[in-house]
Length: 424
Image 1 (cartoon, rainbow, N blue to C red):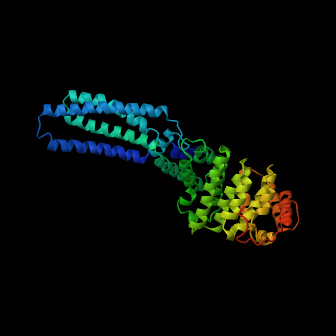
Image 2: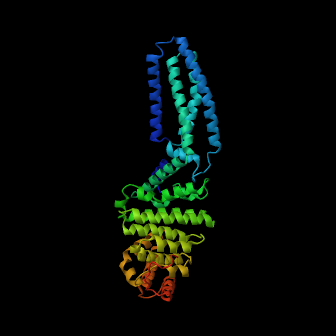
Image 3: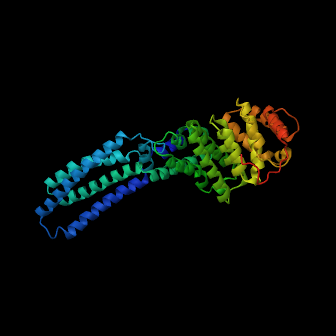
């Protein structure tokens, strides 16, 4: 990853100033100029210079009082600046919204502005002092607004998802080395498990992050490209794998499982422009992340997910990919074949025929999976050929697939599932 790519990542996360913040500063000065003009045309005509100076002195004293409040608020905020309500620090939320220099710059402006206004009042520069009072008071309100945004639940979700989309768009650009980009990016999903706050808030953020790839640009057109599928698989797989690593207790896992069930149901029912291969890709990333983790109940989750939340039209293909991934895990040193799960999956038809019809999809998915494990080209090719030929029934050199097929034969490979079949 070259320096230019690294700077682009840093610009997304640690921008000096966001354009919105610069626009707000411009509006502040515009309001100040307008205030001076209005005062000059109305108030100054009806009161002498001494009276105007007295009014401005009263406003200046009020400004000092509000400055004390703002100072206390800023000091309190900096004492809890690394608190993590939604998985990221409060200071990062402000950086997302206005830039990393916004809050300290505004605070320094108020501290410098107070003595300057006092000098202007002593010099009887009433209109300049009035403009200064308007500017400093508006900036103080801005400081309070920035702090409220950083601690607001709704704003946090909106800003986190916005940054997540920017990071994902950067990964989707041609020429970007997504493996190194991922290392430098902020992983919001990973921090959710250890975040402060109730799980209802965290569950809504998890759900929003899961939908980010389906709300990013013209994804319906991009899903045809191999790079899009590789990046999106990595997005779901890496995010969920890191989330599963953080959550260990049964109660938390059950809630995450429920979120994933709801997400799978939504994309099955609500995305008319999604290709079958995209459904398979997203479901595969979810299932593989669970299989690759050490979480409790992962086998039951995978079986229930496939049987109940994978569309019946693509369920056979999803199950084939599920079997194929077990071969890859075996080569990586993981033995995760669960007898009850294999025998409970609702596969209908002849396994060999289904495998032959989806060889192209299997090859593409195999290549994507192997990137996560860093396998050599020779191992990839040999492993894929052995696994596919074993699934097709030509000959058996894949031990995990042979074991899976033996379990299927014991169960009876041809099963007609009716509505009365058990859910799990």
